[in-house]
Length: 412
Image 1 (cartoon, rainbow, N blue to C red):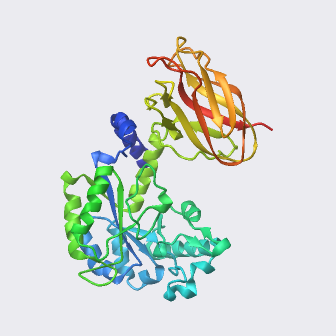
Image 2: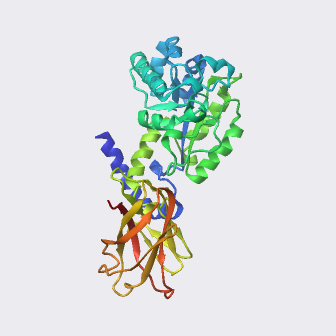
Image 3: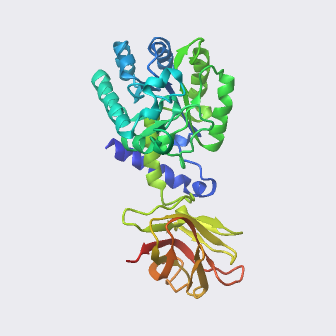
C-alpha cells in the first residue's frame, strides 16, 4: 500500500509539471523541492556513533552509513540505536578491497579478485549485517571508489554486479552531483566532504539546486578535526541550511531517494525526450522511440502529450544511436500520425550507407496513430546511427508527420 501511495503522489505531482519537464528536463522532486541531498559515511568509524549520529539526530537528519561488519561488532549497541533512529545501513564489503597500488591493500588487491569472489564477499557482508542489525543493506559504496576486478585483459567492471545486487551504488572522490534523470543508480557520484568547511560545500549545494540534481556527500570520521574527517562544525551549518524550508532541499538517506528516483522514472519514462543509445530488447528488436531519439533542426519538437516528434520544417530530422545485435535485413515498422492534407510526402531513413525511401501514408488525423511495416533496411552489427527525415522540401507552415517510433525487427 505504501508503494502504491508513493506512486500516486508521483503521478499527481507529474500532472502539474509535465509541460515544464518537456522544456527544462528537470526532475520533479517531492513537495516542490529544488534538489536532493544525501549524507553518507564509510567504514563504521567509532566517531560516527559517539559524535556524528548524535549531532544528526539533534537536527532530525537521517544519513547512510556504509559499514564493514567487523567494525560494527566493536560498537554493536550504538549501531543498533542508529538503526532504530532511522539511519540507513549500507554494504561496504567484508575486506575493503582496493587496488594493490595502495600498499596497505596489497593482500586484498582488486587485481586478484574475480566477480565470483566479490559476489561471495558482498553476500557474506549483507548476511552478517542482517544478523547484527536486523536490516538487509539495499545500497553499496565502492571501497576507494574503485569499480573493477582483475587486471589487463582480465579486468571486469563491478557495476553490473552492483546493479544486480543493490538498489544503488555510490562512488568516491567524484566531481559532480548526479542527475536523477540520467544517472546510473549503480554509479552514483560521491563527493568528498571530509576536511571541508561549509563554505566549500555550499557552492556544490547551490549548483545542484540550480540544476535539480542529487548531491551525495561522502565522508568517514565525524569529529572536530583529523584526517578523513567530516568536521562537526561543518555538519551543524549544513544541517541548519538543509532544514531551512526556503532552501528547497530534500535531505534523506541514499536508499530512500534512490527508491523515489526509480519510481518517478517509471512514471515519466515515456513522456520525456532523453537521447540515449538504443540497445536491443530481449527479443532482439530495436525500438527507436521519440523518447530516445535526438531531434535535429530549426523547429523540430518533442511533444510529450503525444509521445512523438513533430516536424515543422523540411530541414528537421531525428537521429538515433543504436547497438545492432547482428548483421542482417531488418523490417522497419513506422508508428506515426498525419492529417490527410499533409500526407503523401516522401521520407528517407538512413543507416550508414543504407537507405530506405517511402511515402507517408494517411493515418486519419494528427490524433490518430497507426503502425505499419514500410520495408526493410540492412544493418551491420555494432554501433551505428539511424536517421529519419523528409526527402523533399515543403512549405514552412506544412509538416510531414508526427513520429512516435521506428521498430526494427531482424528477418530470418
